[in-house]
Length: 545
View 1 (spheres, rainbow, N blue to C red):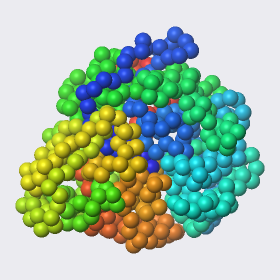
View 2: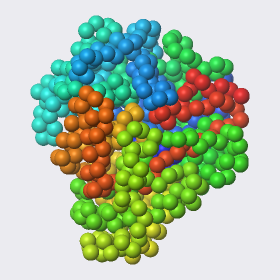
View 3: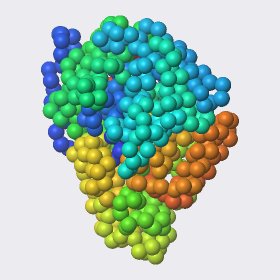
View 4: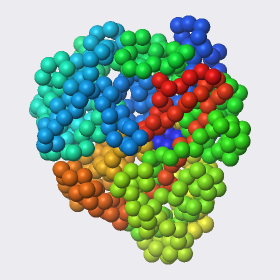
């Protein structure tokens, strides 16, 4: 699940998150050279990762961007949004319940040791075990034996490993699910399914601080030094010379620069102190088209921007008519046309148009109707004051303030936007159930399936172990997801997912606002910069100009 920091997508990603682009300080220019040599690195903007760089505990876009450079997934996605084997040689099943994953030869850890099936079993079992409190644990809920290692709050695990995972030999991993799930292969491009080396685990059985700061991967890049979260403005990497896949031509050094302001990053891009900015703030989009010219890109994106609702934690919003009135009071078209200069589309479903399952106009409460909104809000006795939280490092200030103005004017209430300096700040506040106002969220897909817009964000099981920050729970919704998961026919599964979406449209646990497009740019020093389906850079294709 990828919650997203930026207004360009999410995250999220995958991808959910909360937001504004503040005018605070960003990363300072560090001289332009990566650790370990005189080569000028390719430099990319990111926000500060929420956690240390542990793949099994990374569920947001910033850390995922770094980890995608350090690890190779089992599958990537082609132009038709279909999974294609990457680190896997083959992924097969006869019944969608028992899956056999054969690993491709040639992959080694950055310390030179071979990658084995046991490394995947280790990672997945570690993520699933409740005692480890990993953010991605919910993604393993379909594996047979998950309930034994993750029985739920207040209960003690009866096993340390899932019985559905078996390393048959060094190159073969057998996965048995609790029930058939036809989308399992599609899931395997997600961060949580990366492997974990033995060296990651300390004497206490936990992932070490050292590994979180400098993970050992099996991907294109290796970290040149530990990343000291909170104090280090850069993450330095270099190409791993034994990587068996395609490598970039003409350069070997990569630097992620951590910013707290998207505008500051854009200024650095114009000054050629930054090479890639993948989340241009709304305030710059109109000028970026002329300033960057053919180095500016506006491309389709599978992400969604929401206003999140703390249903479980604030009774002010428990009446669905309050949520419906708030939704109808928001002028999505004006916001997408003016604030985003036409680079967003008004959201009218919980599934993005880029993914099969979307239905145009499905969300009738997403239609702007201020007169009806005010009547409904007053009859539902909605709160007189609302706080609207967002992260100030992601380019969200303008659209959040526009939403606030809509609610003030159309509902006659007091609305206070509340910026959080960093993306991780609002996520942490939501995780701790300390923040009870409405909040900006963005979701970037983890894998291309309608189900990915539903389960990680709104399923009951995703409370605490997923990205269900609002605490929404509906048994009928969960049941329809289960039916969709177990359908062996894709069309049949889609039908159940759309029925589940209809429940979200009726109850509005989140309020869809816009569908993203990717707005990104690069300096004159690089070329051939492309984003993949997960909104991550295809580093092997990037060239120096």
